Length: 183
Image 1: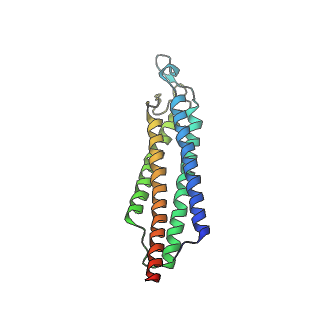
Image 2: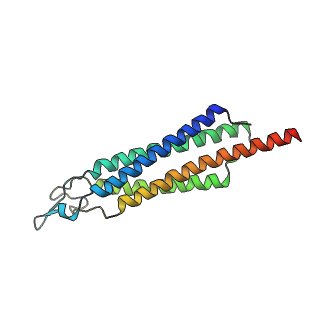
Image 3: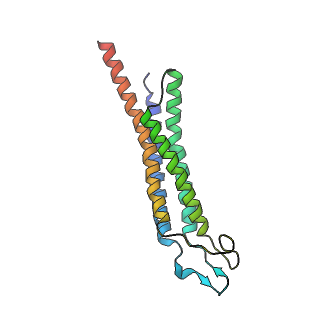
Protein backbone atom coordinates (compact mmCIF):
# COMPACT_ATOMS: atom_id res chain seq x y z
CA UNK A 1 0.00 0.00 0.00
CA UNK A 2 1.15 3.49 -0.76
CA UNK A 3 1.90 5.83 2.09
CA UNK A 4 -0.61 8.70 2.07
CA UNK A 5 0.78 12.13 1.08
CA UNK A 6 -0.04 13.55 4.53
CA UNK A 7 2.13 10.89 6.16
CA UNK A 8 5.02 11.58 3.77
CA UNK A 9 4.69 15.31 4.41
CA UNK A 10 4.68 14.75 8.16
CA UNK A 11 7.73 12.48 7.86
CA UNK A 12 9.62 15.06 5.80
CA UNK A 13 8.61 17.84 8.23
CA UNK A 14 9.82 15.77 11.19
CA UNK A 15 13.11 15.15 9.37
CA UNK A 16 13.57 18.89 8.79
CA UNK A 17 12.75 19.72 12.43
CA UNK A 18 15.06 16.97 13.65
CA UNK A 19 17.92 18.23 11.47
CA UNK A 20 17.36 21.80 12.68
CA UNK A 21 17.32 20.80 16.36
CA UNK A 22 20.38 18.59 15.83
CA UNK A 23 22.29 21.49 14.29
CA UNK A 24 21.24 23.77 17.15
CA UNK A 25 22.46 21.16 19.65
CA UNK A 26 25.73 20.81 17.69
CA UNK A 27 26.25 24.59 17.76
CA UNK A 28 25.50 24.77 21.49
CA UNK A 29 28.10 22.04 22.15
CA UNK A 30 30.73 23.98 20.20
CA UNK A 31 29.82 27.13 22.16
CA UNK A 32 30.10 25.12 25.40
CA UNK A 33 33.56 23.94 24.42
CA UNK A 34 34.64 27.55 23.92
CA UNK A 35 33.09 28.87 27.15
CA UNK A 36 33.97 26.02 29.55
CA UNK A 37 36.08 26.76 32.61
CA UNK A 38 39.85 26.95 32.14
CA UNK A 39 42.63 26.21 34.61
CA UNK A 40 42.93 29.97 35.26
CA UNK A 41 39.38 29.98 36.70
CA UNK A 42 40.32 27.50 39.43
CA UNK A 43 40.90 29.06 42.88
CA UNK A 44 42.96 27.16 45.43
CA UNK A 45 43.45 28.24 49.07
CA UNK A 46 45.99 25.57 49.89
CA UNK A 47 43.44 23.05 51.11
CA UNK A 48 40.17 23.65 49.31
CA UNK A 49 39.29 24.55 45.73
CA UNK A 50 36.66 26.76 44.15
CA UNK A 51 35.47 26.85 40.56
CA UNK A 52 32.90 29.42 39.39
CA UNK A 53 29.98 28.48 37.19
CA UNK A 54 30.59 28.85 33.48
CA UNK A 55 28.31 29.64 30.56
CA UNK A 56 28.88 26.07 29.41
CA UNK A 57 26.41 24.97 32.10
CA UNK A 58 23.42 26.68 30.50
CA UNK A 59 24.58 25.92 26.97
CA UNK A 60 25.04 22.25 27.85
CA UNK A 61 21.51 22.00 29.25
CA UNK A 62 20.12 23.67 26.12
CA UNK A 63 22.14 21.24 23.94
CA UNK A 64 20.70 18.30 25.88
CA UNK A 65 17.13 19.54 25.46
CA UNK A 66 17.58 20.09 21.72
CA UNK A 67 19.18 16.66 21.33
CA UNK A 68 16.33 14.94 23.20
CA UNK A 69 13.73 16.71 21.05
CA UNK A 70 15.59 15.95 17.82
CA UNK A 71 15.92 12.26 18.68
CA UNK A 72 12.31 11.86 19.77
CA UNK A 73 10.87 13.75 16.79
CA UNK A 74 13.20 12.03 14.33
CA UNK A 75 12.31 8.54 15.51
CA UNK A 76 8.62 8.99 16.36
CA UNK A 77 7.53 9.58 12.76
CA UNK A 78 9.69 6.67 11.58
CA UNK A 79 8.07 4.32 14.08
CA UNK A 80 4.59 5.69 13.35
CA UNK A 81 5.11 5.15 9.63
CA UNK A 82 6.50 1.65 10.24
CA UNK A 83 3.65 0.65 12.56
CA UNK A 84 0.97 1.94 10.19
CA UNK A 85 2.50 -0.08 7.34
CA UNK A 86 2.65 -3.16 9.58
CA UNK A 87 -1.10 -2.81 10.21
CA UNK A 88 -1.76 -2.65 6.46
CA UNK A 89 0.69 -5.43 5.58
CA UNK A 90 1.20 -8.04 8.32
CA UNK A 91 4.39 -9.33 6.64
CA UNK A 92 6.07 -5.90 6.53
CA UNK A 93 9.38 -5.72 8.37
CA UNK A 94 11.63 -2.73 8.79
CA UNK A 95 14.65 -3.31 6.53
CA UNK A 96 17.93 -4.44 8.12
CA UNK A 97 19.75 -1.25 7.08
CA UNK A 98 17.09 0.93 8.71
CA UNK A 99 17.20 -1.16 11.89
CA UNK A 100 21.01 -0.89 11.95
CA UNK A 101 20.85 2.90 11.59
CA UNK A 102 18.27 3.13 14.37
CA UNK A 103 20.54 1.08 16.64
CA UNK A 104 23.51 3.32 15.84
CA UNK A 105 21.35 6.38 16.45
CA UNK A 106 20.23 5.23 19.89
CA UNK A 107 23.69 4.03 20.96
CA UNK A 108 25.37 7.30 19.99
CA UNK A 109 22.47 9.18 21.60
CA UNK A 110 23.08 7.36 24.89
CA UNK A 111 26.83 8.04 24.87
CA UNK A 112 26.24 11.68 23.95
CA UNK A 113 23.72 12.17 26.74
CA UNK A 114 26.13 10.68 29.30
CA UNK A 115 28.99 12.89 28.10
CA UNK A 116 26.83 16.02 28.10
CA UNK A 117 25.33 15.35 31.53
CA UNK A 118 28.73 14.81 33.13
CA UNK A 119 30.41 17.76 31.39
CA UNK A 120 27.47 20.06 32.07
CA UNK A 121 27.32 19.14 35.75
CA UNK A 122 31.07 19.86 36.02
CA UNK A 123 30.44 23.32 34.54
CA UNK A 124 28.20 24.24 37.47
CA UNK A 125 29.70 26.22 40.35
CA UNK A 126 31.94 24.14 42.60
CA UNK A 127 32.16 25.94 45.98
CA UNK A 128 34.98 25.63 48.54
CA UNK A 129 34.79 22.30 50.31
CA UNK A 130 31.99 20.96 48.14
CA UNK A 131 33.61 20.58 44.73
CA UNK A 132 32.11 18.32 42.11
CA UNK A 133 32.93 14.93 43.56
CA UNK A 134 34.14 14.15 47.09
CA UNK A 135 34.96 17.79 47.74
CA UNK A 136 37.40 17.99 44.83
CA UNK A 137 37.09 20.39 41.91
CA UNK A 138 37.08 19.01 38.39
CA UNK A 139 37.50 20.74 35.06
CA UNK A 140 35.85 19.52 31.89
CA UNK A 141 38.55 17.93 29.77
CA UNK A 142 39.28 19.67 26.48
CA UNK A 143 37.37 18.16 23.59
CA UNK A 144 34.53 16.67 25.63
CA UNK A 145 31.92 19.05 24.26
CA UNK A 146 33.45 18.85 20.76
CA UNK A 147 33.27 15.05 20.90
CA UNK A 148 29.65 15.33 21.98
CA UNK A 149 29.00 17.62 19.02
CA UNK A 150 30.41 15.02 16.62
CA UNK A 151 28.31 12.28 18.26
CA UNK A 152 25.24 14.50 17.84
CA UNK A 153 25.89 14.57 14.11
CA UNK A 154 26.19 10.77 14.10
CA UNK A 155 22.97 10.44 16.10
CA UNK A 156 20.91 12.75 13.91
CA UNK A 157 22.49 11.49 10.69
CA UNK A 158 21.71 7.86 11.43
CA UNK A 159 18.16 8.67 12.58
CA UNK A 160 17.53 10.66 9.40
CA UNK A 161 19.21 7.96 7.29
CA UNK A 162 16.86 5.33 8.66
CA UNK A 163 13.89 7.55 7.82
CA UNK A 164 15.15 8.09 4.27
CA UNK A 165 15.78 4.37 3.82
CA UNK A 166 12.12 3.64 4.58
CA UNK A 167 10.98 6.34 2.13
CA UNK A 168 13.14 4.83 -0.64
CA UNK A 169 11.75 1.37 0.09
CA UNK A 170 8.23 2.77 -0.21
CA UNK A 171 9.13 4.14 -3.66
CA UNK A 172 10.62 0.78 -4.73
CA UNK A 173 7.53 -1.13 -3.54
CA UNK A 174 5.31 1.34 -5.35
CA UNK A 175 7.31 0.94 -8.60
CA UNK A 176 7.08 -2.87 -8.37
CA UNK A 177 3.30 -2.68 -7.93
CA UNK A 178 2.93 -0.40 -10.93
CA UNK A 179 5.04 -2.72 -13.10
CA UNK A 180 3.15 -5.77 -11.84
CA UNK A 181 -0.20 -4.22 -12.76
CA UNK A 182 0.97 -3.29 -16.25
CA UNK A 183 2.52 -6.69 -17.03
